[in-house]
Length: 327
Image (cartoon, rainbow, N blue to C red; front, side, top):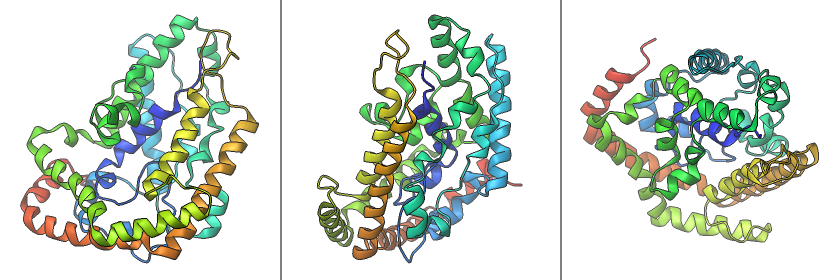
């Protein structure tokens, strides 16, 4: 049975969910390829809500990941399964958006960063134990660890009218629960702040509808079409295309296991995906540099956020005081 990486990715994204809804770029394990002179980290909302995102440097994130693994192991033990904390997850942690990830050189080697940890399964300390289980036991094991398959990821959440961040903050399973516990993302479930957070999330839609952003997006889309990608209207489309291809590595039915379960991707499949990722990300980066698309988005985003912060400063301060990292 394949390791369901898509669920794992949503869980980590949840720890940075508040940044995801206030940034024009998608977040998660990958950096957004951009040559913008503005920087998402200078977002007015990111600045005031930063304590909700918790730690944001590599060493601290690796330590946090180890805490998550330890909590997940205890949860799995409580459910009657063996689970050894995986250090490989912590070793592949990267912080999205540093200056190095905005360079063409970095993108030419890493794409969006999705494929950097694709080989981590080979170091999974639990693989021998999982292999010793029957098919029924394996299904129960993965449901205990990640939650039912219907909670698998953003596609399912969006199909129900939700978001990836919401999927990560409501999904069950020991890893998702451990992430919420360690990264303190329970504020998403607090009805007291739901209207405030929904309003913050809605800013992204307003950014996309801005005439300046629409014009920049059209120019970027034309540039991407010239590069061979004719069905991409926004930068999110480019990242989603790559993300879907990565999910397909694990979701596509195969007969390698003989039981209808997906088989693990081969080294050749991973290389093919990595090559595609780099090509798309490079085209995205170069078209952004040519059109100023991301810069236009951030300029509009910052203006909207400044107004939002002025109008909701007291509520935002209260949210941070209630849930922010005070370390």
